[in-house]
Image 1 (cartoon, rainbow, N blue to C red):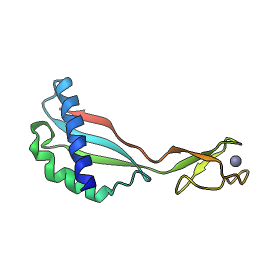
Image 2 (tube, rainbow, N blue to C red):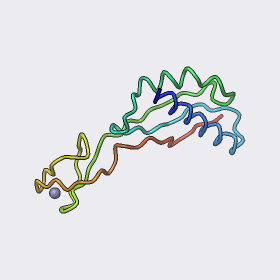
Image 3 (cartoon, rainbow, N blue to C red):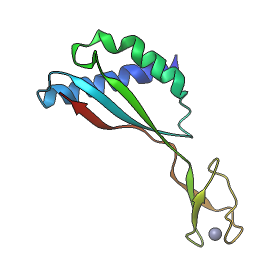
Length: 114
Ligand SMILES: [Zn+2]
C-alpha cells in the first residue's frame, strides 16, 4: 500500500533525526502534504499509528498533517492564484501557461522531541 510505505519512510526520517540530536523520544511530527501529492491523509494517519510503536523513539509520537492547497503561477504575467491542478486558466490574462508553485509536497517539516 502506498500510504504504508510513506508512513514507514516518515518513521525512518524521524528516527534518524532524533538519533542525530540525541533525543529520547519524539512528541510530534509536522508533515506538509500538498493536495496534489496523491496521499490519502486518513489512510496515512491510520498506517502511521499502526506502525509508530515499532520504533522506541516514535512510540508516543503524534502525526500532525498540514495540508497545502494548490497554488499556480502564470508565466507570462506573473499572477499567482489557487488552482485545483497544474492546468488552469489565469484569471488575470486568460493564459494557460502556468506552473505549479506549491501543492505537490510531501515533507517532514518539524519534529518535536522530548
Ligand atoms: Zn496571466
